[in-house]
Image (tube, rainbow, N blue to C red; front, top):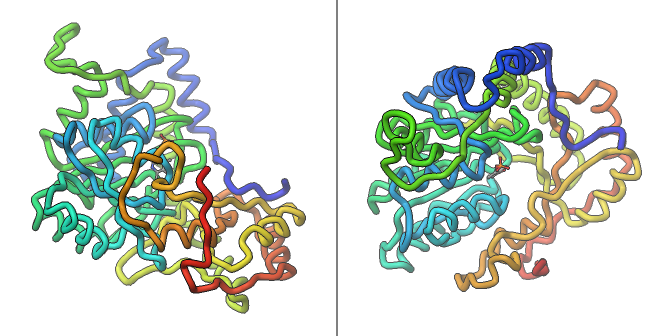
Length: 377
Ligand SMILES: *Cc1c(COP(=O)(O)O)cnc(C)c1O
């Protein structure tokens, strides 16, 4: 594959940071993690940040720290990576899916209200996903959360560097969770982060990820887990964080290039509502012949990917779920295709993508949602 769909960009600062940690002998949780937490909180404009072993454990710990657990319900989007719903289940709560807006791909606030109504207000948290790097409709979701007295937790795993009315993703809910998996906007290999302005959530999360540890070694004040980040990962993260703005700028510029090259085709290109800055974790189009387009691009050496081919409520692992159908999510699962947009794309790579798109047949989407059959996998 000449143009991959994702490629991490590891620089000299990351290499030196890792070597320094190795030479220090302090490989696990330690000072480098504390520095990374401080710097990440500064970046997001939050008072606190708690590092974790990955994005899934960040979501799990944030829910527990916000008081979500057994017998609780969390409203979330079914059009996301399965980790969002898995973390809810691990907290002891149950997900209640609300459909997404087919234009923004994000949790639809009116569907959230409908889900809450259907449960007679019995909902404890709302967890929007800033899918593909576009912040969800946080103003409206904040109002709904306040009205129903629920916490609002951002799944910002794809949204490092995105903003909503000038405020960074990570500072828009009661807490937010990031992932540093290698394909994300910045990486630590595996890693995650919780950001929050809430001192109690921050303290509870810090305890939960470290076996419920209180003040001092072997003082355990509550049940907890080992979800700690390592100094090695944090050293990579510090180098990456310094370049995050640069990475996101490159993603935006690549996205503009792709949109220009798709303007004469029937492909539906990403929509960015007023007041939001997209981080373009993914550049995702919709078309009527997604699988054929994917194959044609592949034959020209252009990687692409389907995020996500099956909405979470249709996965076998969620067969027990008996909520209402989610027509927008089910339709999108059959139409979306993500194209290379990562910051490592060269001019030549972009021209390869543009050439492949120009030669490909792109069909318009069929608007009848019932026309899309989603298989259970
Ligand atoms: C990547 C991702 C996660 C999970 O993060 P990991 O670091 O892979 O555990 C959760 N939610 C979304 C939307 C993601 O994209």
